[in-house]
Structures are given as C-alpha cells and as structure tokens.
Image (cartoon, rainbow, N blue to C red; front, side, top):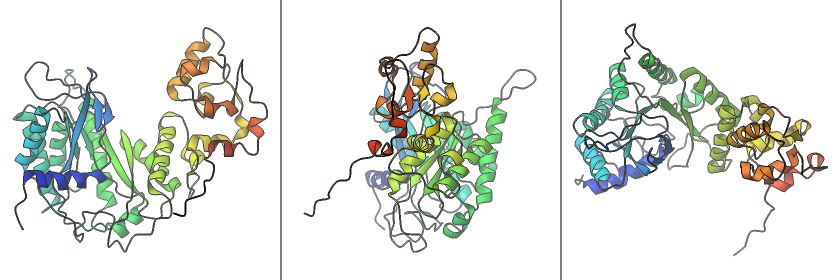
Length: 409
C-alpha cells in the first residue's frame, strides 16, 4: 500500500470521525494561555464550536487516530469487513496537527477517538500518549475530549482522565440483546463496568483528604456516552428509559443519540422505517425534557412507544393532556409553567421573578422570551384568553405543516 501523506490521512480520518457525536466542551476547567506559558484555552460551553470565557469562538479538531479496527460491528462503517479507505496517524502526527492547527488559529481543542488496532490496551496506550505529550511537552491547555475503550486496563483509563477534560465510553446500542447480535465482540457488562469505574474515579477526585488536600484531577468535565439509534428494533421508549438509567447510574453529562446511516453489506441490520435524522432530533428534545423540565420517560414515550415525528414531544404531551390547560401564568407553579409549550427554563424563571413585583400581562411575554405561537392555546393572563382553542378538535393541525403536492418532474 502506498504511503499516505499527512493531508491524505487527515481527509480520511476527519471524515471517519463524523459518526462520533460526543464532542461537547461544557463543564471543562477554565485554562488560559494568556500568561504566555502554554498553548490554547478551554472555556465553558459548546459542541465542536465552543465559546471561551473572553467570548472567542473556539473549535475542536475532531479526528480518529485510525479507522483500522479488529472488530466487525455490523452497524459501523469502519468495521473490519468494510471496504473503506484506511489510514492511521502516529502519536507525533496527531500532536503536530493539533499544535499546528492551533498556531494557525483553526482550533483550540481536540476530540480524539479511534478504531481498535492490535488490542484495546495497545490502542488506548497510544491515545493516552497523545494527550500526555500535548499536555506535558507542548503545554497545551485547550480542551481535550477522549473516547476511551471499555476493555482497556483501569490504569490506562486513570491516566487518560488525568490529561483529558472529558472521557466518553460508548454504550453503542440501546439494548444488550442488540449489542450481542450486532457487535458480539463487545460486552455490555464490560462497557458498564468501565463507565462505573470512571464515575468512581471522578467522585474520588472531588473528595478532600483529612488534611484538606484534593487528589489529582480526573476528567473534570465528566463523562458522556453515545447510543446508535435505528440499527435495531428498540423503540423510543426503550431508548429513553435506558438513557434515564445511564444518567442516574453514572452521573453522565450527556447521552448522545446518533442516527444510524445505512452502510453497505450490513445484512444483519433492519431496513429503516422512520426518518433517522428527525427521530434523532426528537430524542434529543425528549432527553432535554427529562433533564431540565421534570418529565418522566413514561409521560413522553410509553414503554414500547414511539415519539411523534410531526410535533415536538412537549407539544405532543400538551395536546394529549388538555385538561391541564389553559394555565394561569400569574398563579401556576413552576412545574406546571415548565410544561407549557413555548416556555423555556429561562423564560419560566423570568416569569417567576417578575410575578413578585407585578402581574404579568400578555404583552410582557414577548420581552420575557416566550414563543407565543406555541403557547397561546395553553395560557391565560390579562390581555389574552384562549377561548375555545384548548378544546378545538383541529388544534393539532395548527402546529403541523400543511400537506404539499410533490412535483412529478
């Protein structure tokens, strides 16, 4: 095989990394190179494109160390039997790319994942070597997210957490049965054991000794996971139930849902029956409702049930529970206000703050930030009453796009 140039490798491995979804930089330590002693900076929020504390937009270099893999997972485009172009970075090449991209002001952080080559420990050792070299030799202070390998030794995971801001371990699929069928070389037990180990180490890193000293840092931005959606028969209710369990069991910062894209020669996979990207979008919305709006999984998607693709999950719940509406904006509890379509967490808090000083009128809601197009049928307050809207049999049709005749040419 002809030797590939660094730019050729970058083209292949940057494209291969697009299937890895977990690249949020929220929660990382604030580090800066303003003192002239290092490279890069790490700040508070964002996915791929993040914003530093001083307001600058920062980007992450998102690559695979290699797309060679000894595993043959049916859903993965980089599986051993797949006929894709292969490439592999050396440790020094990844370090060089990261530093050079930073010096050119292209990026200020790194998202690194990899296929499995030789063995889990061998691959993990190379990845750890990359981030250690960046931190120690290059004094790189930017954000680093490392996709770790569940079967790697605990010592390697511990060192990875020492250098990286965030670690993630993919659960791969929503159910153990699907993992056994589509990725028989991977073990759900070892994946969950590795996630539990990361949680334990993170908890230990926060505890002070009897002398008041803290142990060394360990993945201060936490851990996340990725779940492939659509490669098996799991329902949206099953997926969200599993996500809820993951959040509570491992204190995850985020569960990322990755819509399965059809790939060649995947005979073990089921044909797609729902638009994958819209399904992924609705799962993210439902996940948000569980994390920040007080919804339970059973309220959003019953066991074995699927999310409505035509309206968002919060609106679907409101349409199915019209007896809770209209809500009196000036008297309703925070919990009920959070269930009003068009009301976000920030707008609800602004309403609660404003209610302490004066009565809220309809015209105030625009400046507060409410989306009145969605909220109007579900609220009542001075200046607005929904009248018969909550009981309108055609209310749902107001929120769905009108059917269009497709062109024949």
